[in-house]
Length: 446
Image (cartoon, rainbow, N blue to C red; front, side, top):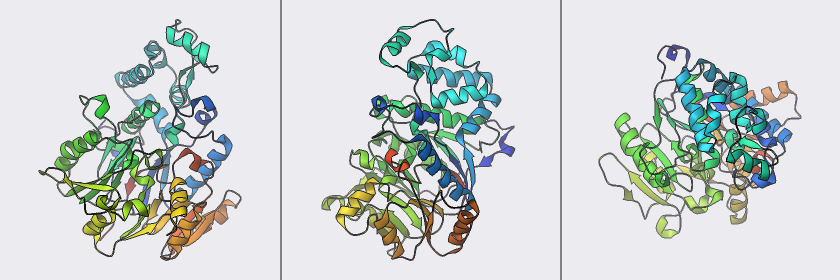
């Protein structure tokens, strides 16, 4: 970190998933969505093309709810442009070199490092055409792109950057820079970490890394959607198609336990290798004190009964498989026997599967009992209503003053689910939690 700027930055403070949210990083989807075609879907991890205008409107609506609820909302590309201006030349050159090296276009790095900050920030997110760098000598990579890609892309766009939960992870008082599991997203962690380290409005404190640089590539991968910071004593991490067991064990053993003496246990949830469950927060989020929202078939059953396996990591001990305990069991072990799980989709198995797919378990908590969820998950919202959640439906057609009043009234109620249209956003496979990177929450008195 740069100690001269720390006094101007935000200290990371995230001790749980539900305390009042005070600062959060997002990315408004833009031209990187426009530049994606159906030929890119599999490579860029999408199931379908999104409507750029509607996706942006839905995202803007979500950020308005966050802001009206009392959170400072920060755009990552604004931080990135500022960081490019303020960072030492050597740090910027290292960033650009790593990005170009990852993309196999190392010949671009010297040229891009001299671009104006706004243009470089935009290009690193939205993609760069070979035509944007005409003075760079031809290369085999450029010739191939000209033959097979009508867009002539030197750097591909980053349409997944809107899912800001994954590139960096706030854990207690530090930021952990993720190791993204797929080439399509590898650049995101580099950009987010750089922006938050060097921007005047970034973070104060320490950055850590999700894996050792010497770790084999096949053993690397940890993304923010798999990490739930439940309390100063307990963290839960999904071992998924995106987060590898070697990386999780390294993070717990070499980073978390030595740094945080209060941390007693890291529960690792063994998830199926399925796109529908790519991260832990696609099947489990916390919505209030002692109350979780999740995919009941996986979380109510132990491994022995066909549910998710749970492994307990503790300081100085070998990993322990809890074969006879479900995820709900270990949550009750940590937070009391009255801990409840609201079934995503309700109790009907058909709707449980449907609404898990449409991010019905992926809620972002604004404060205890105040959450944001896609309004299309009707059965999930009905299940929440049985536990006292009022449904405040927020829409782009409402006047801004009316929306602010709805949010104000919802935040004053005991429990509220703010439902908003996410018909396009949900097609990208991520809900409110996926779309946000909290940096600061209040410290909640127990």
